[in-house]
Length: 217
Length: 272
Image 1 (cartoon, each protein chain N blue to C red):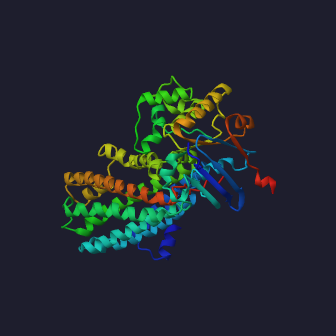
Image 2 (image 1 turned 135 degrees about the vertical axis):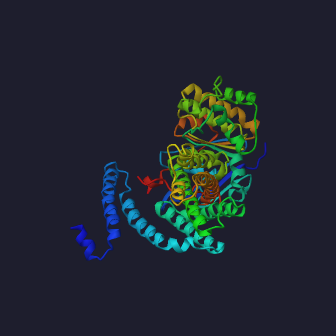
Image 3 (image 1 turned 45 degrees about the vertical axis):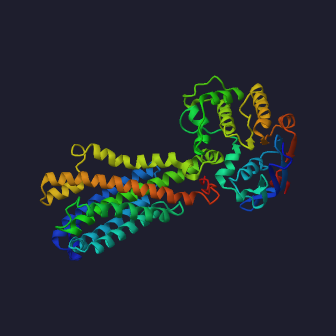
């Protein structure tokens, strides 16, 4: 394991239409580390992940991935390595298989059904009809497909936004176990947003608590 | 009473009957506006402005058509087609006021799509333009340009409204490393397909349900029915090809309005 951080946030601030959402957020994430972000709703937890994923550019401050400012990365190359699973698990029109390989396909990669089966077993979603319509899945199943879809890219940093909000406790624990198990396999760091403090304390090695700036002011 | 007004305005008698018919048709327009208001479709003003503007434009066009049809210089004819293309892009922008950058995406697309197809058609002598260049090229060009305008407007409208309504799906695609093109390919494909659908329906029912204007006009003008019918098929193929080229160009150009250089979505959420 390398000692150099995989991801660094330095005094990251974000404002929308003059309204401050994040102020001077700094954190350092290493390989094989799970970092939790908690805080009340509206405190900018999801915004922070979107900034790290480069879906939003911060108003000020710097995000570095592998020591390099994310603005110096090609956006697609960065997002292939720093993959985000949004809170709302959205399915692309088509089959479960099509959704699982969606990320791989856009990067010109392919996979075998055996690998899909293995990753689905990891997220406790096997057996499943790979040719079934993804839109017919339950909320919890969609969430697990979304996590599996991200893991298939073997990311260096996995950004999870309330990843188990639609899962029951057993499934949530299984997903946490899977992700923890893959940390060293993938040499991965995980940034996880959760409103559940118990989950943050159980699942992560460090926790950053954000405050709601609009309420604070 | 109406006849007195016409007499007062010294409108020649041969036009008064047609003007009366035109005014009577306004009853139909009023019914249409009432229905759109009742159903909350919200295009009443556009229909009124469109009728006034369209009437003025088509009357002016009719007055100068005789000169345009007499044109024989291909450069001048293509100048007229370019003007029509610019006006089509401007019209598309006016109809999609809420969306930024429409003109930047439609103008090059309509010009390239329509003019390239017209140029190839002329170069390959697919249409018999030599006997009256303006008479053939300009009305056909008008049809091709008009369809490019409709299709490009539809593609932009769909791309924009999908980005607003399915924002999270689009961001899911981007978050997995998709390019803006990859993230929107499905929307683009669907919008082109649905934009072509009305013409595809007309194409499929050609001669049975739909008797298109070009063929009817040619037959009325004394052209052999067989020749007129084959011209109609040719014009459909030109419309599809030009529309496809214009739609593909416009969709790629419009991506620049929807995403910034960091491939971040810049489309604003819909106003509630």
